[in-house]
Length: 260
Image (cartoon, rainbow, N blue to C red; front, side, top):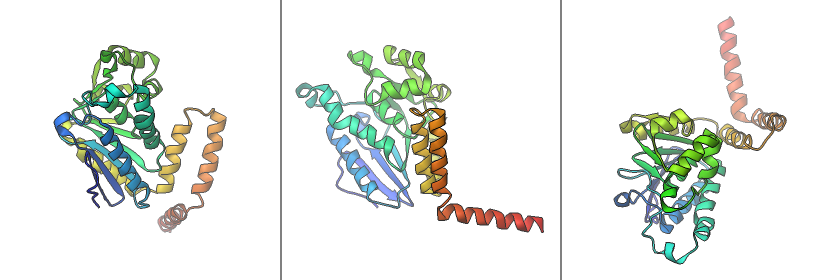
């Protein structure tokens, strides 16, 4: 299914997978108020489609996203904190709390808020030579759109501080080694690998994917005792689903035949 109403992103869905493509390739998909609104509109479509299990977020052309478009006129007229609170923060909160699995397929460059957007995905795949850059310091700013949370939680205080304070560029390969992203692959295979991952996940139990996502994110705040309780309650819910009962019956049937 395609939606023609969006002007700065492309949207399509098929077989339980929704694909959102940032579509300002002539500007390296730099972010505008319109693009952020279009992403939210695409997410609205997804939330009203019970078939969608996986969201694939990527960028058209030579780059994933170069960050906020610094030529956008509203930067002169609105306080930066207001722009974050109205546009960026709601999007990051939404991506990290949606029931669907969010995959980012990152090509070319992910800089500034574009880097934050890539890191907001549940699973981020990138090309080995893809550039990740916290460019804010070069503008006299601090990383935003969640990066001051994503960085220390994934790679520790020292590495996070270094990337934020220096604005140093790291490659997809380095990002994988640091634990910042899920996986780095050959540049020309990024979309192929991301689509295969999305396809595999779309065949999985939606109930299980939801519980896994909730549990992993909750672990950042929970004690071990609290996490054990969370696992117990979630597993109890999953154990009552038809999917588990069918999988268990299939396993037991195969086991019985192998013992005969």
